[in-house]
Structure formats: C-alpha cells, structure tokens
Image 1 (tube, each protein chain N blue to C red):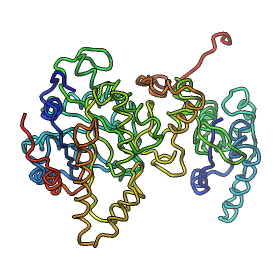
Image 2: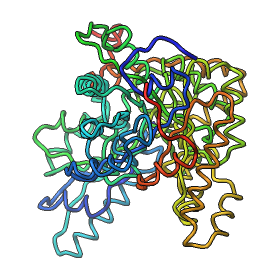
Image 3: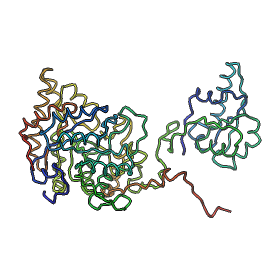
Amino acid sequence: MVVGERKPFDEITRMLEGHKKVLVLGCGGCVTVCLTGGQDEVRVLSSQLRMARDKEGNPLEIIEKTVERQCDPEYIDEVQSLVPEVDAVLSMACGAGVQFMAERYTGTPVYPALNTSFVGGSKKEGYYVERCQTCGECKLYYTAGICPIARCSKSLLNGPCGGSTKGKCEIDPEVDCGWQLIIDRLESLGQMDRYEEIMAICDWRSNRDGGPRKMIREDFQR
Amino acid sequence: MSGEIKTDSNLEKILKSGQFAVTGECGPPRGADPEVIRKKCGLLKSNADAFNITDNQTSVVRMSSIASAVIMMQEGLEPVMQMVCRDRNRIAIQSDVLGGAALGIKNMLCLSGDHQKFGDHPQAKNVYDIDSIQLIHTVRQMRDEGKFLSGEEIKGVPRLFIGAAENPFADPFAIRVPRLAKKVAAGVEFIQTQCIFNLNKFKEWMKGVVDRGLHEKVYVLGGVTPFKSFGMARYMAKNVPGMDVPEELLERMKGTPKEKQAEEGITIAVETIHQLREIPGVAGVHIMAIEWEEKVGEIAQKAGLLPRPTV
C-alpha cells in the first residue's frame, strides 16, 4: 500500500489561511489502512482545524466526507455536488488522490493534508515499512525476495558496500543492511550462486526517468 | 602475475614488474586554493608510486578529484583519480572518465561512495545510477572495447588502470571473497583494502582470495592507516562503519603516554606493513595517513619501502 503521514498541523493551517469553508476529504484506500487519511482522521483533523480557527476568532466551516478511493474517477464523482459549496478541498489521500481531485475539479484549489511517504506494508498495527520503490523492473528473483533498491541505502545491485556492520547499515544502527538480509536468505535457500552473477546496469526507463508511467489494459478499453 | 601493460600508469608498471607497490592518499581542500594540494604533494612526493585523490570523501564537498589530480600531476606525482557513484549518473561518469584521461590521468578507483547522510549536505538527492561493480565494467568496456555503455564507439579511448576498494572486515564476511570475485569478473585490475588492524581476519580473507586464485587476476594492496592518538583509534573502532580495530591495539594505544601515542601509531603501521609483506597474494600497501600526509614518507622509510623503484 501507499503509506502517507499527516503533514504538520501548522503547515495545514497555513494552506487554509484566507479560506472560510473547506471540504476535508478522506480516502478509504491505503491511507485508511495506515491510519492517516481515512474517516477517523478526517474527523480528528476537522475538529482540530475548527478549534484552532475558533480560537483565532476566524471560524472555518468544514464539510467532512470520505470516499472509497480518491485515485478513481468513479468515486470522486461522488463529491461533485459538494465541491462547488467550498472554497478549497483539503485532501487526506496520497499524492495520486490529491492530483485526481485537482484534475477533476479544476476551479477549486485542492491541498494535500498528507506527505506521501512510500510503498510499503504494516509490520503490525501502526508500524509501517518501505518495501518497494516502484522501479518497474522487479529484481526479487535474484535477491531472494528482498529488494536491494528499496532496502539498500545506496540501492546497490551487486552486494553490500563496505559499511555493513553486524547486519546493520552504515547510515543508522537501527536500519538492517538490505544485502545482509539478501545474503542470509540466499544462503538459507541454497541459492548463493545467484549472488555471484553480476547484475547488469539498471534500465531506469521503467522508473520515473521515462516520464510519468502508465499502464493500459487494452481489454478494458472502449 | 604478469601481463601486457595496458596503460602508461607507473603503478601498473610497478605491479606488473612484480615489485611490492606503495600508494598513498591525498584529500583535496574544501576550497579553491591549489596551493593546499601543492603543499601536500611536496610532503608526499617520492614516498609512493601513486597517490589517490579522494572524491568528496565522507560526502563533504571538496575540490573535484579530476582538478586536484591535474594539480598533482603538475607537481610531478602520479594520481589515482577516485570516482564515486553517489554523485553522478552514467552520462556524467563516462564524461568524467574521458575528461580525466584526456588530462593525463592514468589510474582510476571505482567506488560506490559514502552515503550523503554523513556529509555536509545530508539533504542532497543521491544518484547511485550504477554501482561500483558496474562502474568497473563501464571503464573496462570504454578502455578495452572502445565503447560507451550505449554501445557506440569512442573516438580516442581512455587508457586508465582500473582499481576498486574492498573491505574484508565488513559484513557479511561470507561474501567478502565472492564480492571480490565479482569485481574481478567485472574487470578490476588492482584493489586497495579498507584499513587493516585485525591482521588475523585479513589473513583469513586473503586465504580465501588465494584459494580462489583471485590474487593471480588482481593486485591486492593492503590498506594501512596510522593512529595519531588513542582517541583516534577509539573513534575508528566505535564510530566508523565497517572498521575492525581489535581490543589489544586499543589497549596498546591507551597504555602509551599521550605524547608518545603518535609514534606508537606509526610503529603499529610499520609492523602491519612488515606482516602484510609476508602474506601470500599481497602485492603492495595503500598508506592512508588521513590528514597526516607528512608521515607517509616516515612510514614507508621505516618499513623499508624507500626509495621507490623507477620502471
């Protein structure tokens, strides 16, 4: 899932300066799962904003709403009647959701309430970790299911740098050396021969370097 | 190991003549004053066969490796231009390889580079488009096949003697020899190791290197760094990732009166060199006297490595 963190409250209030009525729009997708942008968070942020603005003697009217997914036209159509009522939308979706809203509702400013952090998963509730940098050319076959691009701090493809100590990365003793994990798993699977193959230079065109990416399922086109 | 001389590098000639090679290191200044390098060159000259010019080491901005190397050559010393993958993509790397070679640089060391987190610009976006092994392969392809990574022909191939680093003390230890094997397969010609303090571990690694016959395909230069003080030894032991300083060396430095610690550090370095010379497969030493360039000559002298041969 896409993991996002809520922006600092001060930054959000600065974005809303000058606005009188806003739509705080949650997303029922990934950010609900990682507890940063769903219905509950919409409620909490809206209350905080109301209180802060009341304290200033500059009340803010808020419409609260959460849709299934903001990265899907079908679902953001649902707020079509609400958007004209407000002078800005504060989206609690990831960056994709914010942009889908901005593209759909061109006449209204759409602001992000979250910082979109990474593609990852939850180790346990409230604890999320990065696992993929969406390079577009999955190498997990060669690396025992552990991604060197996402998990090595230097994204090295051919083994650990000289800074790996006791299984930890040189940048932080709390961070696992991605390559130590790869080697340990290759060893346990009896696949160490895969380490000895030189991994070729990456074709980053499948990453963002080829411009914004798209995927078209021809069978769904009309 | 012998073989055809591929470049005009003095270091290559020394190594291929079978003589025990010595390399040193010079950190460029954090400014545009060339005199800083000229002064260091005065201290280093004739004390080693070639001298590494570091490339923004520890991710701190310094004068560029290529420019510093050219100043070094003006002073009559042979540089080893270091190049890290942190700051350049494959286009900039190949461009700098051509530029360095055109300016007369004859040796290049291929490194991934320290992470920017440690430097003076931790906010920087790193590159790491390719890694050190892929960099070795790139330079080798440029030199021996006369081709860019794109496959297009190079008009005027760069003739560089190709080196890399290896850290026998980093984890996981099990892949430290296979990792060298990958560098050899990629085309590296000489290796400078991380600073050696734990000689037993280094011997264990070298045995693995020799058992695989890698010492017949690559020249291994053991890294030697003198401690200036007990404080420095302790710092290296505790704070430098991938560094292995045994307790007995720390005790030895600690037990030496403060005013004699620098001398003791030099003695340890000299002893280390004597031991390295006895280890099968070691082709030379790389003396890294960090910001202590004036001591390289003394260490080399005491280790019986001077005068340096001419080839």
